[in-house]
Image 1 (cartoon, one colour):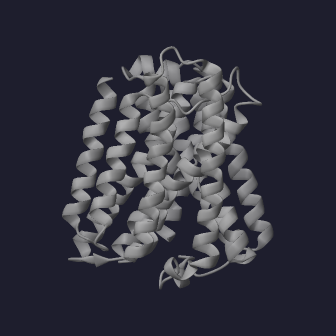
Image 2 (cartoon, one colour):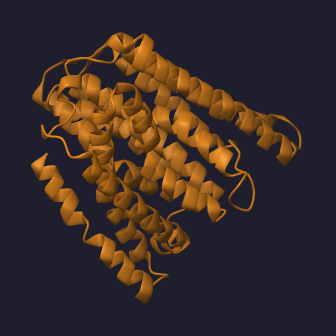
Length: 355
């Protein structure tokens, strides 16, 4: 972890660089790039602080904390985009986070782990439970999108109400999933990895953890505001659509620190933890972050958000879930399966680039 901490700390230099560019070149595409990079180490330190607090608070409260702050960077970025009425960017970032975790992160984890271990094994029952929740996520996206395209001239109000009601179901399912994994069937999700949860082997004080968490959260909100306000300029200057930026760029930025952790533990043959990070993060996005954004949109932003995605986004999530479920169904992984997942991610990235 020392090397990783050093890299994260060195990237913090992009925080003052972003603030300087904000005052000198607020419409520069470079501001978008530097604010993206600045969020990566801040998200990493937020994750470390949350992990430390969760370790001290106990398993139950720790699970809730990880659910709340596990995808805090993406949530903050999305809330600020929502406040500025950039609904397409918000939806694209949700789609990108889901497919990014189950294709890019899981694929890179399988690939990197497979280079060091000929065949890796993980808990098949736990992986199946996670895959089922991913499938539910796909259904939640398909239903409101199908309603939009199948019903002649659907009313915006009806779509918003349907999205709100589905969000309530998703949130209830997510809470039930927490109960399942933390209480009634926690033996399926606690293996040898659990004892090694803290990589550096020592605990921070609660005061230090809270201070780092608050500072990181505040700076992420600040950098996210710069990022959101520079999205349009960056899209024009770099020749990219806002959907591509949301699906690929913003999604990778918000999850970068978590991505690296999943890959590193896979290289140590701790696949249960790696899959829990990658697939669990996608589930949190679909069942926790998306409903929170739907609820929040009724209080902030110019109009409520809905769950009507583009056909390409729905297709991407469904196909990603399908192949991830297929590959993880046998409880074993190797480098070639990781390569296959990465190939699908590249193909979908090409699709969104040319949309």
